[in-house]
Amino acid sequence: MTDLVYVLPDFPVNQHVRILPCIELHHITTVDLITLDCLEIAKRTRLPVLDVKKLRDAILTALKSNLGLTGVQEPRSDSTSLRKTGKQVVDSWKTISLLDDNIDRALMGGIPTGSITEITGESGAGKTQFLLILLLAAQLPEPQGLSCATLYISTESPLPVTRVRQMLLSNQAFTSAACKPSLDRIISIVTSDLESQDHIIYFQVPVAIKRYGIRLVVIDSVASNYRAEFDRDPKYGANMAQRSADLLKLGRFLQNLARDMDVAVVVSNQVSDRITERFYGTNISKLEPRPVDLTSALPIDKTPSLRNSEVSNSQVDKTEPKIISRDTQGIMSLDHQQRWFTGWGDEPPSEIRSITNVKTPSLGLIWTNQIACRIALLKTPVFGPGLQFNDGNEEGEPNLKKWDRWLKVVFASHAPESGIGITSAVKFDIKECGLQAASNG
Image (cartoon, rainbow, N blue to C red; front, side, top):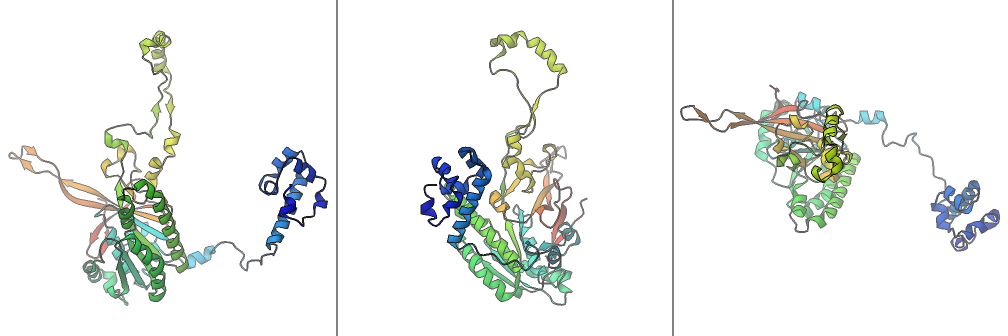
């Protein structure tokens, strides 16, 4: 406390004259007193804990007084510290329908406002078709839509006007609506690089939302420019920290944008192949229980104790259960946990239909923590009989007939997850009118 006279020259030391000499004897500074636990200081100085606590509180009060922090805050006018009460959340709950009862049922009404929703899947799974139907459905009146204009930000190709017009003319929900959706209420822009993408999102999007009354912002896709900017750079490892910081900034901005302006932010995301041990022909996963080898690393014939007890050990092994070790570190690893938040690989190893088709959404765990909902669009091949050779005596490789597509809710703040695999996912087809649920048969 030798520095107390410099930190707080006007501090009333007379009130604590009994304990100050002992504290100075043990070289405890003012910073130590306000940062360390009072019990620890009492043990070092052998002083009563209450006396140390009184001195600490007096120093904190004096410091706050010098800094002008002694004013009492006015009580909050509302009786809760939450942003919204439960009734306010229910009253303001709005969703954008996909115009199909089965799909809307899986999403508990559709895509909600006020949060970020991600649509992920491999090429040809139907991500863009999902986004296009949202751009038109949002223009419908409630409860199907929001009666609003929409914004489409593309990082790969311009808005497919021909396909949008086809949906407008073939979907009964659009043709029979009193206020029909139109291309004029879709504001689209293409961003060719990350710099222009950041400028548009951070500066132009908030202005456009207020000017045109936009309630749906679509980014197709969020990963394209990031992968082009960072993944192909020679300094890949050094750029990961910068990419993570950029993703955190983007996620925080979109979260605030969705919440403060009550808009639905929907982004599509690319996927990449997931490399696992099963690709190399190993049958036992690193995460499965394995028997522990209790023998030495030395050969048995060079280990006298083991050589003499070989017979007895073999007899014991027949009666005693095997000792199984569970790799706790492996279970808590990202490689194991990502099976339940990526949308792929959550089936048991014996039930995985196509191991080589296991994917992982781009941008990693950093981006996953920024979104409130992830919808995975899966596709599985359907093969037909192969070509016949030599008058039907030989059959070639099976022919690919078509692709089955599935909509799976991986996680969401407003809807239950679809569960393991595709057993509870919604099978759908891409029609002229948009997305349409299909029978699982």
